[in-house]
Image (cartoon, rainbow, N blue to C red; front, side, top):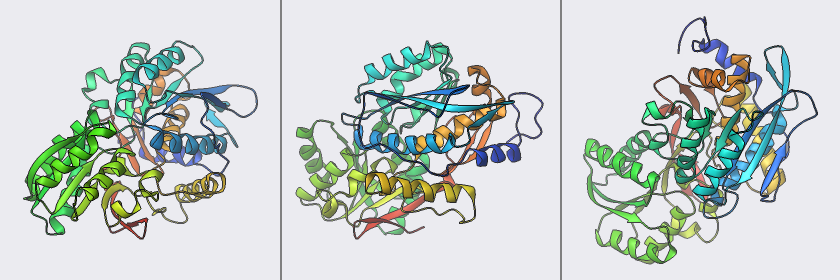
Length: 405
């Protein structure tokens, strides 16, 4: 990060972290339903308006609903004090829309929000395809967009992603940790089962290189179709490779379905998941026998905060978990990416002393933020900010994620 600020694109690490701490979350409540649209606000007066297009229904709901719940808790917590933007204390108003896991609908929603003068930033898209459909709109309308999806193509090529940022980990960072775990466990040959689409494409490229570096043979790559009818066939093809390990690179609920299909096809070896598999759905009863003993790479928030008890982030994370359990009955450790996206946007507004889209973008790309899922470091040449050392190794033991390292 840069040293003393003399303009909107140069910040100090100390200033960014101080601003981040000021927006961390202290508690609130969420909602159980899945509305077409919802607004979260506190009182009247000046506002920081953030649009959110999320998968509250359809195939992406396993990830989208959890993020919407965390976002609602976080927004109410931020609004307990408001956000100091210049000499004006603003409340955050969220406009949450259900994109129904449909990329075309997500693009239309982004267009409607982006054409409004009162909307300052956008977040959402837990599926790579919905996020990708928003990118062109956000670029054209010069609307800062923080994606919650997995997929390296979301933030590259940089020349076409000036207003686009991502809070999920890079595929290469996840793949390297997975390859290290596989090597440590003594497996010398594995097969990759990667879902069709942009997320699976990123995983296939990253795992190929990471396994080669680790000296582990890749017996083959099988693509996991999105239709239920093709899952069993893909699993049988993966099992036919006769390896001791299968890497499942897929987002929930596809990851759980793949695990069940692999076990049904007779696979008794070890399963390895990327971070996209981590959602409440993965550990539910219908998946539990299949995923027991599986490994996953995921940010440090999984399975409980690993942050110092005295830190503002640690307190905020524990309060988020408490509120989530109180309102929704269970918390299985999904990363609060939406909460961190909100934090990153409000921090940018504080530092910019403005809600102008251009100034928000300038401070988004020069920001170090200690978030709930991990540490983020954005620069003008790196819009995917999750630091690799924020990732941990986990295993499912007794139906729960347990951190190994």
